[in-house]
Image (cartoon, rainbow, N blue to C red; front, side, top):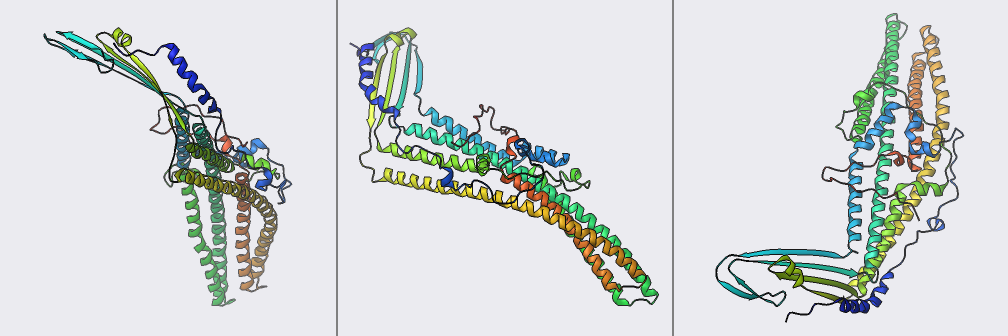
Length: 506
């Protein structure tokens, strides 16, 4: 007789036996994650740096800070960088990879099933008999015959001690950390484009200043030449005029190189070859400036900064992995079932089939201390992640403090240098008029022209410093990534599932 198939009653008795074991599946070994408190992170209540008294930027302005500069070229460049920057593309790919790992971890908690089937066709006139190894039945065939076989298998590991749940927690936190890393990359790219744009505009202004001074020094050299021909001055004045003119001319190639370097860097940030955006930036323009920003609340900065979020989510993932390793110390319950049959018709496959249910428990007995060593190693990894998180918070606070102070200093310095530049221009005008009539010597005129060039150059640098410190402040406050579009899938990905919501700190 064929083996007896298990009925509903026997299967029910089986599940009644394993139900008490499965009831333990609600627990998860390992520590539960709790975000460090503000006091543990040493977050101050306020920033100490002085702030500007200018109109302040609100949250919307912070998300699209480049709009405040009111420079359409800068806005266009940042929009293009968001869409085509290769670092952003790589970070987006790593985010998709992390989300795929999360789906794989979630799938490990579900049962796995497989099915197989085959058809065997025999052709001949002789009859034969054979015993089906799957069912134990004797099958007699005569002449042409067809035999059908089919089987179905299912397996599931009961997550009694939460090892799989902890791995899902770790994968989810890692995916959120990757998303925050993408946002920080977008933030950094926007600020890099802005900083290099300011450098390019500064180089243009410095070139204009140098060329204007060079033309003025050519006039001075000509004037000195005329006075020498008239016997009013000696050769020393001529050589000093030539020397100053050559010094000014020598600065022009260096400034041109600074301009080319900044423009080429912008092109690469846009995912283009060097020189691709030179024609767009070549028309000279002034250095753009944005309105001031009030000192923010440190806690808001910590929540807004994506690099801080990434470090916090990485810490959460490392803590969850402690539970993954700890679960290896406890027994594991695996349930499996199978059904198979064969016959001369498809219906016989089901009618003649038999099934089985198997429950297996495995537990470590002696591992030579490997599991406990892995747990200790993972705890150390979590400690390192905590230290890295705390360091990231302190560095973020430091960057905001420095940027607030830097902008305040740049504003005050720009005001004083503007006065110096105006005075230097007036001094050169007086010196040239007095030198023409012989009231002063050439050295006095030479010194005034040198001072004018230095003052004009310093004024341009002071304006650029103010723009630079403003961009650095926007970056330190965590602004810019909010306006970035979602990353475009790569050429090897045909479908991207819906993105989860942005992570927030617990």
